[in-house]
Figure (cartoon, rainbow, N blue to C red):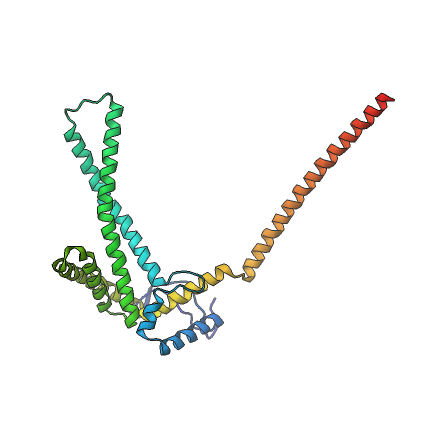
Length: 283
């Protein structure tokens, strides 16, 4: 339910004022948390420089977490590595299988188990080599592209196609660095073309949704800090839940203690009865 007089903030896809993909995550702009976050953002905007924003990429927050930009670059690099392993490994395994069959048509094995073992080893080795050959390159390029794009956008605090083109240029040049200056130029141009295409799509989506890089950057930092703070601090609901769990735990301990006491008492009574019977027999 919306409170009267308050316009909720939505995060969704809106084109020409038409809410195509609405988000039901409503943010109350009059809440103390939202107001403090807005005041903090405005104060930081007025005082910080491009170099100050760039340095925050390499800084950890009060809870030891990486910055959203660095975390995004590492996530992109990891995703590129995994996708590259699949793209390079699957075709390589098929090729290794076919080559093994061709090479060993006239080879005699002791039994079919030995042939299957050698085939499996050859296919696995070929798949690992082919997957790594493509995976580390794709992971390096995607991670570097994401990092350079975020770094340029953070420094300029703007959202244009230029940031993506510059990120692709730097990533492509770094990717071809071991091959010499000519390869760096070719790689940089290729990366710039890919970055420009990706930038046009990203900027177009942001225009459609009505968001900017500045808003996303500050909100990502604010949301990450708020999420971390919520996880490590006790809220009333968390305290209530922990209270219920603690009560259940104490009740379980009490039941176990009662069972142990009853068992101990029963054993002591049995031993006492045995002593009495022995004494009566002796008398």
